[in-house]
Image (cartoon, rainbow, N blue to C red; front, top):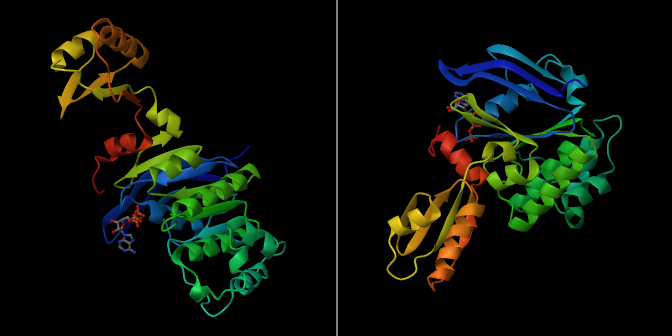
Length: 301
Ligand code: ATP
């Protein structure tokens, strides 16, 4: 099947400053794809080019067979967009705004269904200006969904959401993809990318520095074993037992291991044999956030 989105050697500069420097991305139909990267990495520029709001300087972009710039209303009818911030019709009710937007499409979703999907049923008759920040964001998502889009672009969809609302949004986004909608999102939340995305691209200074499933990016990086140091044992003793580099900081040993099973076995056997306990023992796997910080240098782009 042809990809929903194809990006080839995309380039964009503002006043000579290169914001996007030769990006290549394919997004399959029904895939949830997340663009990650520090502030200024080029995420919004890329999304806005895909949405047809910005001209690329160079390269090729195809969404559902359309060039977003020339696709016009036929293109807009098939995509949904949630911008980073929006402020629509403050004096209309939530239901009225949704009905207004539904009127722009040939085969819109039912307003009540969309409000239920984004958790705004109780606010249906509330005026937009009286919604909280998170509720407005939900309304933005509702408006993006109402036209039954095949591809939905979500620029930081859950910024400002409380944890419960974020979980609800994740469920909604997952169910959209399960129903066949392609989801292209940007996010600063690594847990969001980890939970939602089939694949992520990490952008740094306008370039893709990693691309793949969150699990593949984490890959087979090793793990850390941590425990409170028993008695007066020093780092070199633990390192010898575990056959792995060990540091001790404030009475807590951290052992960097490739094979946690083997190292745990060696450490617990040693502790039992010597009548000691490994208090607060834990095995920590690297997270997507660890990998992201490594890839991006942990600083702004
Ligand atoms: P954030 O996470 O902060 O939203 P981003 O990854 O979306 O960042 P962009 O908004 O695409 O990054 O910006 C990329 C670079 O292009 C930045 O250096 C930014 O200052 C610059 N830039 C973006 N829009 C414009 C503009 N309209 N005019 C000039 N420079 C711009």
